[in-house]
Length: 409
Image (tube, rainbow, N blue to C red; front, top):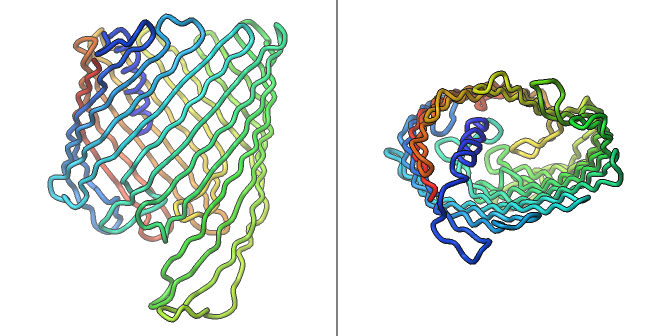
C-alpha cells in the first residue's frame, strides 16, 4: 500500500512539474490547484477477523500547492495542503473530513546542504496494531525533520539531523496511548569514488509513551503508567552508485534499547478504589542487528525496481515495545508515454517485547497509471493486505480496488 502511494507521488511530480501554475505571484512563487477524486471498494472496512464488512467509498480531495523558489539557485520551499471528504455508501456513520498539510524546503551552498520538512495529518483507520470492533480509530499525526550536510574537504563531509513525530488519538484515547518520538542522526562521509561514499554513523532515539486505561474485568480498569525508551544505533554504510545499474544507500550496525518500567494498577469502578497493590512491568534492556537500506535497480530505461530493508525498534498500538523488520519490493514499468505500471510486495514482522505476540503482515498491489497530458493523471489498482497475528482478534484480510483521477493545474 505504501509503495503504491509513493509510486503515485513520484509519477505525479515527474509528470506535472512542467504544468502551468494556476496563479503566479511575483517572479518566484507559483500556486497550483492539486486535487483528486477516487472511488474505492474494500472487503473489510473495520479490518475485523471475525466478521468482514465490505463497502464502497467516494473521496473528494481538493488542495493547493505553493512553490517558492522559481528562478532562485540555492533555495526553494513547497507547501502542499489537502482536504479529504470521505463518504461511505452503507456505513455512513463513518463519513468524515480529514485535513493534511506539509511543507518541504531546502537550501544549498558550495559547502552546505540543508533540507527540512513539517507536516500535520488527520487519519481515521484501523490497522493490525490497533483495532476496534465496528468502528474506526481517529488520530492526528505531527512531525518535522531537519537534515544538514557540510563538506569540510574534497573527501570528507559531516551530516547531522533531527526528527520529531507525535501521534495523538482523538477517539479511544483511553486504550491507545499518545506517543512522541525524537531522534538525532550523525554521520561522517568519506568519498571513496566520485559516485560512492562510505559512512560511519550514530543515531539516538527517544520514545515517550503515555499511560493507557483499559477494561480488565466487569467494573474494573487497568491503568498502565507512561514510560520512555532510549535507543542507540551504531552503524556503517555506503551511498551512491553501488553497481553499474544499482544506486541507493544502506546503514547496518547494532541497535541497543533501554526502557523505564511502568506501574500497573487495577481500579474498581465506580468507587475508584485500588484492587490489590500496584505492580510494575519489567522491560529489560535489549539489543539487535539494525538495518536501514533502500536500493534502486534500473534494469532497463523502462523498468526500475526498488528494494527497501529495515530492522528497528518501535511501539505497538497499545504502547507495547516492539522489534520490527520489513522487506518491501516495488517496481515501475513505463509501457509508453501515456501508461505506467506499478507493482509492489511487502512483508513486515512485528515482535512484541515482554509478550508472546507476533504479527506477520503481507502487502501486495498492482496499479496502472494513465497520463493523458501534463494536467491529468488517472489510475486504477488492486491492493491486498493480510495481518497474521497469534493474538486473538488482531488478524484480518483486506482486498480493495479503486479508481482515482488527479488534477494539477
